[in-house]
Image 1 (cartoon, helix red, strand yellow):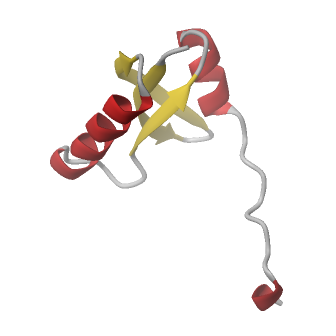
Image 2 (cartoon, one colour):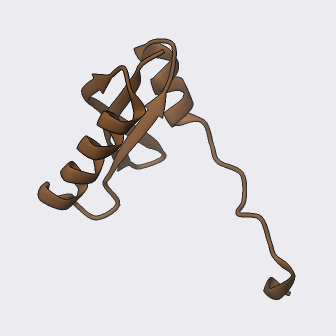
Length: 77
């Protein structure tokens, strides 16, 4: 399965997803995502995300899934 890199822009309650590229290996995808985060001018709330998925449709579905709350540690009480 490939690794996809997307520019994610929040637009109200939804996210606008723009596929930038894809890679077959994690190392290359990770390196490119880090480079893009350093060199691209991102608007407030905009992110560069890497996602591992069977195809673009699955990648976009995964990126649009609501994330659960951050887990609490014993120090968060």
